[in-house]
Length: 413
Ligand SMILES: *Cc1c(COP(=O)(O)O)cnc(C)c1O
Image (cartoon, rainbow, N blue to C red; front, side, top):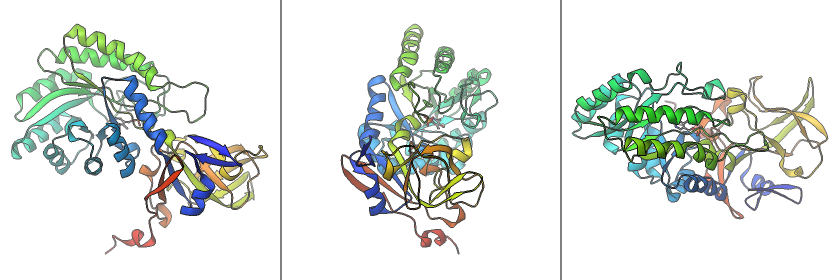
C-alpha cells in the first residue's frame, strides 16, 4: 500500500527515498502484501475456480514464486515463460500453454512438461498430434476461441475481435473438436478465450461468457469438457477514477451464467481465469531520478527511466500517475512533462502533469507499473535494465540485480 510520511512516498512501510539511495535508480519496487491481497481477491470472488496468473504481465521469478505459494496456476505464452513458471514451482497441472505461433520445439517442450495446451489453429492441432505420437505421450488441449466481442479498450490490446490474429472462429469450432477427437494422442478437454486487456466496462464478459457456454453446450455432446477458461483482462485504476470493477464485480457477471449453463448442460467443468494486469499492475512503482529540468515548449523534466523500462505510454498511449516521491505532501506548483532519456521524441512518461516544484535530484515515482512494465523492457540505447526490489511490511529485498555493461555485450561473438 502507498502512504505518505514526512513528505516521502512510502510503499508497504518502506520509504521510497531510502530505497532510491540504497539501490539506486531507476528501480522497480513491488509491494508483496498488495500482490498477495490482489490474488486473494480473485480467490474469494471465485472460490471454486482456478486462477492462472498470466505470466507475461510480469515474470519476475520472485513474483511468480509468491503467486505459486498463494496457489496460482499460470498462463504462459512461450517456452521461456513455461520454463520460469516451472522454476517458480507453479504446478504443471495448473499451467496452460498459449500462443498463436508456437514453434515445433515449444510444442514438444509443452507436451513433455505435461501442461495443457491452448490450440490456435487446425494446422497447429496436427503438429501437436504428431509431436505427441513421436514422444509417446498425450496432449491435453483446448481450442482458443475467437468469440468476436468488442471490449471498450485500446485496439492493440483487444484480442477477441473477429479481425484478431488469435483463436479459431466460432464457425470452425465443432469441426475443430471433431478433428481433435479423431487425431491420435490429443485429448480435447477444455475451451478457452481471452477477449482483451484493461477492460473497465465488464458487461462485455456477459456476452463472452454466454457465447462460450453456448459453444460448451455444442461441444459437450461429444467431448467431456474438464475446463472452461474465460481468460483475463480486468482493468485497473490507472487514472484513479472513483469506481472501477473488482474481481467480485466480475464474478457477479460470470458466475451466475456459468453455474446456470453448466447445470443446464449437465456438465461440471472447472472454471479458469487468467488475470495478469489486475494481479500485478498496482503492486509496483518505478522510481526514477530527475536529471534535468528545462523550460522549452513545455516544462520538460528529464528522468533516468524511459520506454526502455516502461513501454506502455509510448506503445498504448497509457496513462500512469506520477508523483514526486520526495515531495509527496507538497502542493502543486506547475505543469510538467516527464520525459525519459531515450533518443526518441516519443519517449514521454507523462504529459502536462500538475506537480509540486521539480528540481534536479528529485525522485519521481511512476505508479501502477507492475504489469507490462519490466516484462516489456529492453536495452535500447545501450541501457542496462534496472534492478527490482520486493518490499514487505517495512523490509526490502533486492530480487533482480541491475544489469551491467558486461551484460550488454555478453552475447557478442
Ligand atoms: C495477456 C493475456 C492474459 C492476461 O491479460 P490481462 O489483461 O493482463 O489480465 C490472459 N490470457 C491470455 C491468453 C493472454 O494473452
